[in-house]
Length: 191
Image: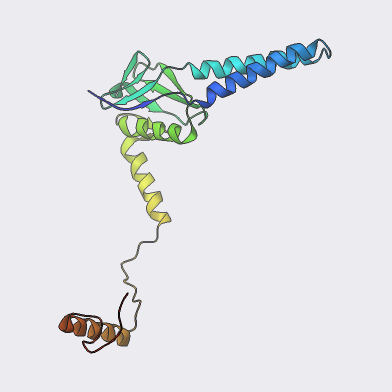
């Protein structure tokens, strides 16, 4: 029962936490001179706390049999609905479990890793309705939409005219017979 993939919070949230805390501290000193800066202090302090909360989110592990968020295990069979994400960065994904309990999965990763996690959750939750569609229908429609965007043709395009193809075929036969690109009496070299 090994972990397929483990998702950790992005390191960018460390920098954002430190930067917003630094700006909040600078606003405290600035508020001694200019009192309205005190409002900015509270705003940046709140922003710093928000980034800190996102940074300290537990890791998310995707297993074959379950989804693990920190110490909480969610078997794939218990996921009954996967709704549209509220946001992608950070990923806020509402899940409904069989007990009609709502669970908000929050992952503070990059856009690419958030999309990978969302894709894996949709792929593993075989008994869930995804955006109101049954699992098979969701993935079949996704494939049909992909097929519609691609041009599918059985026609084989000829690059050469029939005369050119005949000439190329003749040259290949000659090369096979001779075993060389240059005639035996040629002074040309490839060096």
